[in-house]
Length: 202
Image (cartoon, rainbow, N blue to C red; front, side, top):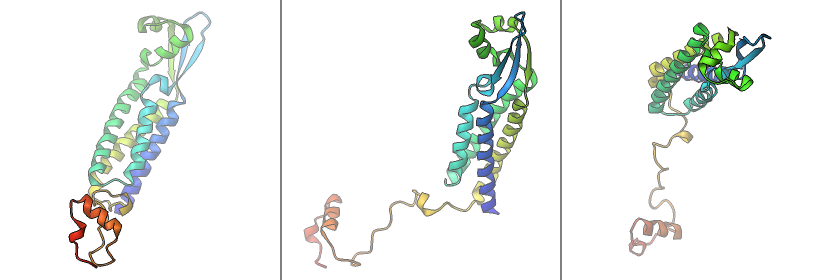
């Protein structure tokens, strides 16, 4: 069960991060301009929410690292995952339910050269969302649940392999007398402030 818990958390984070990064490249909003010709503009997720792609990449990194870190970092990563989910959920929810002009302003400005949110608002006749904002909002809910699941179950996860652990310190030195004392050992003695000439002969 503990192994499954870790695997479930890792898979959930990686999947949510991947969906978020993909979503950043997809069309989120379609804007109809009140310019006499009714031109339309497609607004990608990265333009609607500039932090979408960076936070998606951060979630991917957290998911990968979560598979090897110790207990303290599991809690830290779980809390950070919840925080990222809240941030993404807040921005995404505004687009899903409110379709704010600010989300399309940069795309409209790039296309028309008109700046200022008020001027852009006068030029925009309609804003229609695609399915991607809703998909991303659901993803943030799953992400928040995965972060909370990590916080609740992290203490029961089996420890990561020894090759990933640094808190155990360096490998133990071979017991004295297990092999002849050579020149390298003498240098080690000197580095510790010991006089190798006083060491008894092997």
